[in-house]
Length: 577
Image (cartoon, rainbow, N blue to C red; front, top):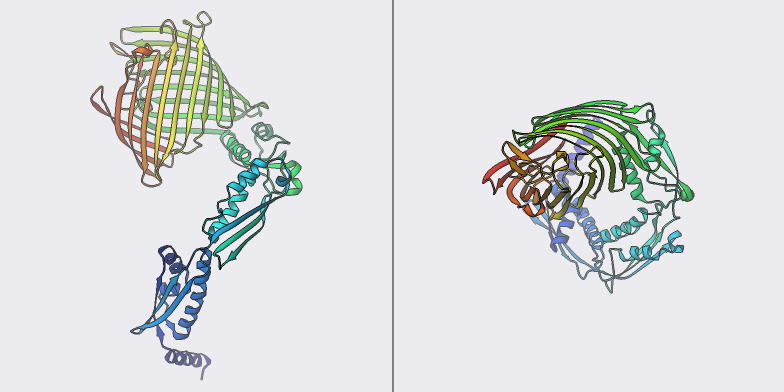
């Protein structure tokens, strides 16, 4: 008789001798334990998969699952549970029932943390105390294995983020007293040596000078290592315009601690780049733009950018030459700009020459600039003027919101100051001050609250002779919604003129239904006038939609202006190719 036929007959005989049965598993336990046991017991898993089992396999699963139940309950702090198991027939099938009485839960009785390594010998008593206080599993709390594991990881995290990147949990023990339902915890943390920065080790750069990478570095040889420094360095490299990607890291080898090399690997952007874009805004209408960038003029990393932008109500074109950051952290640039606009009847044509020095330190960006501007201005038949000003300006900005489209915490604060002196290539002496603050608050699991305020003022005997870029108007998407863009100012026959004072504010609540779509409700208020006393705020209220598109945020708002008694749609979208 063929061998395979013999095998088949033997298998058939075994099946006939041992009837197979379907299985249902029931667990009676407190809710938080029932879910855990139902998910992980071997018998419950076999029942979910619909396996057909013989009596021998049922008995094996019953005993194995009882052992597993005790192990799972121990991870939740129940070391003396009672688990009753029964296996009964239900017609041709079987029902396996687990009745769990967990008993008293074990709680942490004592906690002892020992510090070894350089941290134990250093004068950083405050750091040691903070680490011990931050340990998340304290005496009196229920003991769970997951909490114990999480607490150990959290204990070394502050060390890894500072000068101890080789820190580790050297030893740990959770001694359980089942009679007293108590856990005595001991662990030893070895901080390892304190790490200090060594020299940069740069790789991946071919087009652009290594000095660009060195001058962007916030880390200096001899300074204590800090994880945030490395993250900031990586961000600065990727936003510098020269590199598409950057990786900054150190090797936490204790042998290198005295002067650990900082390994910097970059992927360079192309030397030349041409881009075009299109968009639409209810402020200034449809938009098309184009720019050409050369990132390595004279083989020294100088960036030459030529761009043009055409909108329904505004057109401009310019050229800028920018130097890479120097050894003391400054970026210098010179540029020229020509722009024309016709907004709310105020027509301006201006030419600008500017030289700037910018410094970025962490979250703070500051810019010092010298600017010469000439302007031709017309408003119907009422105003026909030529203005010029040579201004010295200072701008200071701090952002704590990161690089996300829709931040839920942090703030952005901008302060500007500048002025001109009559007779020094200026028609009028004036001082211009401006500030804008936007604060973001988390509001529940999916919401955020945004509060914004801005104020501007020009100190001068007269507005005559001051270019409109240094004056103010209000209204529009980022000002007072419910009113046309820059429609709040000095109303003249034929248009709205810019004025010397501005004050606006906004409160907005957003709720996001998922990772892409959200809604908004808001109230805006503000005005622009020729004196602070003449400011008389008008209000706009409305609702809106928010969409996280792949190319950036899309905002659609419907606002009602109480002064005009009209509804106005506000929308913006832009794409760059």
